[in-house]
Amino acid sequence: MRFNKKQIISLAILSCFVLTSVDTVQAFSWGKSKKNNNTQAVTLTKTKTKKKNNTEEKPPYTNEVHSVFSLNDCVENAIKYNPGIQASIFNEEAYKTRIGQAWANYFPSISGGLDVSRSGNNYTGGGPAGVATSQYLTMGYVPSVSADMLIFDFGKTKASADMAKRMYEASKENTKENINTIIYNIKFTYYNILFAQAQVHVYEDTVADYQLQLDQAWGFYRYGTKPKVDVVTAEYNLGKAKLNLVKAKNVLEVAKVQLSQIMGIPEYTNYELSDQLTLNIFDITEENAINTAFEVRPELISAEKMADAAKMNLRAARRDFTPNLGIYGSYNNGLGNEYNVQSGQVGVGLTYNGLNILRIKKQIDQANAEYKRAKAEYEDTKHSVYFNVKKNYMELETNREAIIIAKLALDQAKEQYRQVTGRYKAGVGNAIELKDGENTYLNARLDFYNAMLNYNNTAASLEKEIGLPLKLKPEKVLDVTKEDL
Image (cartoon, rainbow, N blue to C red; front, top):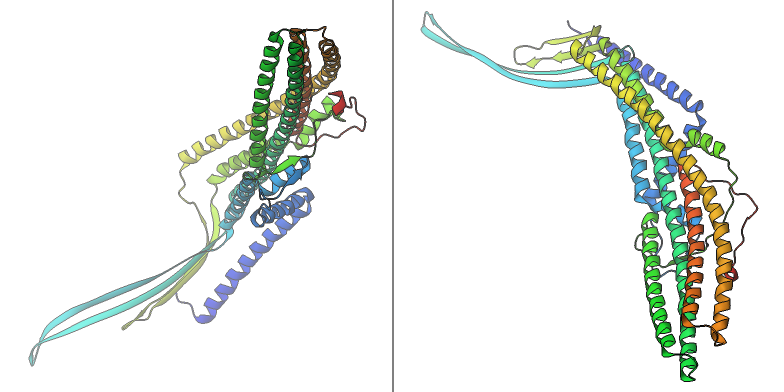
């Protein structure tokens, strides 16, 4: 079948028209999807902004510059510079390309080639003049081009594209969950640094108190009012307090290095924190916390999207029994010394690509099992979210009450220490009584700070399980100053 130039041009125009029609339909469907999903559009915009920030911005911090960080500053630094968030964003982009790869089935597939051949023969025959010999050689060049394009495959491509889209949406939720976890780690480490700072402050006060007691013990010993054992006891207490102070400072430095690593600036440690451990009251109930977590927790939404993707995969597997409707065309142009043959074809047909009924049946069974597994994993994640939210909410209430009790014990220990210190200065008390009072006061201060630490860490854990920050109430149940400690 031969084609003239006009026929070839008409075929090219027809192919371009079909291709443009498919692209227009896809563009309309994407535009409609974005129009009906404002939340997704906002998320995509935020993601692009994050990508730009993460690829262009570099941490401006050097140890020659001193900084003061609040909790919000630390969170912002982590979102900008933590490489784990960057990895999640690029993972989103990788999953996004799979949607286009699935729709690429409707894009024309073009192939071409060039065949070069040489043929010939020798002819020997008799004639009036005797034996004659002739040689016949032919060199041929046959360039060819062919194209085929899928028109309709009974929903197989759409199911694959829908599955890729669900996986892309799940990857976006995974990025949110990663950010959620990093924010929790920031808060957890931040509060531990505040506790470590308070611990250093307590041991510094203890060293100062024991130094004063040692001076008093030496004075009493010189005047003969106290035995030397009081001096030895005071020296031992002072040495132990100094050792505890060294350990507390080391814990503080390690915690700062850990916070720097989470923020994405691991080499920067020349900073201090602007906050202190406080008791904040949150405006939330247990029922509200659980319902909010079911609505916005990224891990739960991701599990739901993965279950939807498994469902789309099952739909695609079931449609493997259907044929493909497509158009095809080819053109060959032979160039040679003795011939010049042109040929071409165009057509529409239904085709099966490697139909294997047994394999398709087993693929459907596999997809069905994976879909059931994904649904079970979603339910398991939902149960886990419910348990963790409920557990952290109950612990938050318990830790709030523990702070109030620890404050009462601290006030009693402070008063007891004031009395035994006064007795020792007056020469009435002894070193053992003084040491017991000092230890009681020291432990009461550390217990109070530890109760504050547990409360704030539990609040951060509850925020992580819910997926949103907790709202604060304006009132304060307990207002603590440095004088109270």
